[in-house]
Structures are given as structure tokens and as C-alpha cells.
Length: 198
Image 1: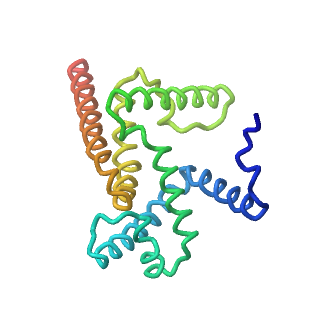
Image 2: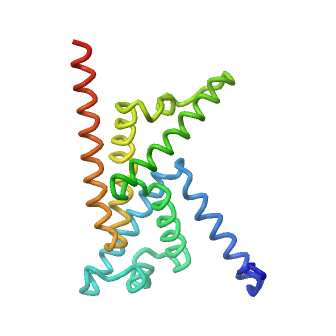
């Protein structure tokens, strides 16, 4: 069978689809993370204003997009692309919003990949990021890395995304719970290290 879902698209539609996919994938690069946070925050503020003007503080992005478009002097395509970018990037950094057992398993895999990369870079005499060096079985640096990642990267971003899509707010509760758990793991490991050192 032919699995080419784009087969029926005309050239203009395919070009627009391709451009959108590229923009959305590039938005997962962490070097644009903080710029994306700012853009999502601006969109969230405009959407909240539009919701307030509509008298419905829980109105969805789709229902208020045209109002936001007027408020922000943007075209609808730009808003849609930003929402797509924000959703894919939110997915890319979503393991801390999962139930803790799943979040920890995914974090372990990511940190194991970091460790392998750091070891490879060291073996080739290349510079490496120090936070990537510890193995995830080293519980204290593993927990510290998760606390920093959640507190400084994931939470500020997901707070803004949940302002756009309020149905995601339950994920913020899970995120806070996971952050508390990682902080407790960090505190326990620090206490254990202090007791062993005394």
C-alpha cells in the first residue's frame, strides 16, 4: 500500500506543510527555548485578554484565535505555527510532567545518553559539558540535574503553555509533585554524604 499521506497535496500545500514541519522541529532545539518561552508568554497574555473580553476565561485557543490575532496584529498562520511549535517543544521536555515512575525512567535514559556522550567526547579530547559526565546511577548529581532542569527550564515553559491550554494544568500539579520528590531525593543524598563525611 502507498503510505504517502502527502500524495494528494498540491505543491503549494505541500510546501507550506514542509515549512511548518521544519519550523516546528527546529523549535525543539534548546538554544531557542527561552525565546520560545517569551513568545508563548506573549501569546498566553493575548489569549487571556481575549478570553476576558469574550467573558469566558476558559475559552480554547481555537475559539479565541481570531480575537488574539487582532490584538497581536499577527496573521492566523503565525499564531497556529507558534502553537504547533509550543506543543512539540512541550512534548520534547515533557518527561517531568509524567507520573514520577515514568518521569524517572525517562530521565534516567536521557542522563545515560548524556553520560555516554560526555565519555565519548572525553575519549576524543573534546570539551564536554560537566553536567553530562555523571552516570545516572550517581543519585545525587542525577537528582540535582532534575531539580535544575525542572525548576529553570521545564516549569517556566509549561506554566505558559498551560495558560494557553488550561486542560494541561493537571500536568503542572504532577510537575510540582515530581519536583518535590527530586528535591527530597537530593536532600536525602546530601544528608547521607554529610553523615559519611563526618
